[in-house]
Length: 329
Image 1 (cartoon, one colour):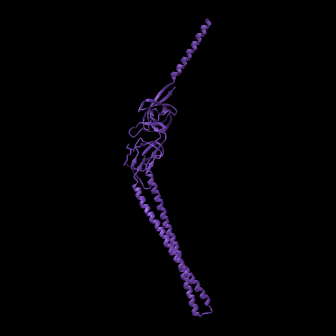
Image 2 (cartoon, rainbow, N blue to C red):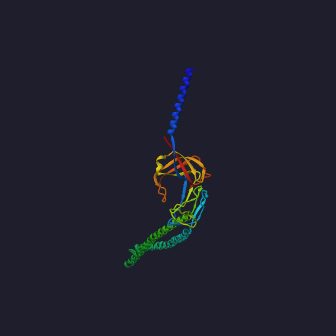
Image 3 (spheres, rainbow, N blue to C red):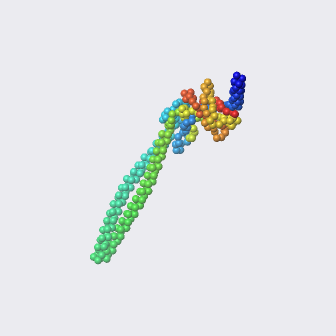
């Protein structure tokens, strides 16, 4: 019995030692929290700007869908004033029609002129041949004076044929130049008309995909509205997809060294404080930057993928509070 008691006491001592070791380990593995702010965003976003139309720099908005609307693919979301392009197109088409008629007139008039010139040349060649035969056949049969007279007539007929041939060649060359110039003009006007027609269609922009319409502010924080005039190149509308939501976090410079990709994160939406969403850091920014022109805090951007986003509640732009779980050994 004494032996059994001793074995029992030894077992208890070993178990107590293991518990103390586990307790020591648990105490050494502490979790600290880095808090940060962020906002909901879409990982798939399309930016809408004024279309590129040749020689068009300013665009007046005549229609725009309300911000926050759910846009469907192919739905018109913004339209610009197209009156200037329509006017240019009307003038250009008028010039094109005039040039086409001028080209047609060149074909008709030059064809008639050259047909007459060809007939005149053919007649002159016939006279040349006839006078040549008479002159050659008169040798030895007619008087010298008559032969000399027939020779002169032959030379005159020959010179006339050469003159008419030169006129025809010059006329044909001049006609080719006229036609080439007018055809080039028609081609240029046709291209310009086609570009204006395409520009006219571009003045109505349709949604390239399903998404939520979000107006993008300018440098002064002003958003667009119907009737505004904007410059080409300005970003006007953002179309995020709500089924692919991420958190755009902003980690303060002092905490950036503690944060790494793959760490667990808890996210609370300011609009829904009772819900806590879980996620992980998926990407960290490459450089530090100022938070904004008004706030001089230096931050590091961090993308956070949510494990189970609720697309029925979440909308891009919602403010969030972030807690990054940091394991410290």
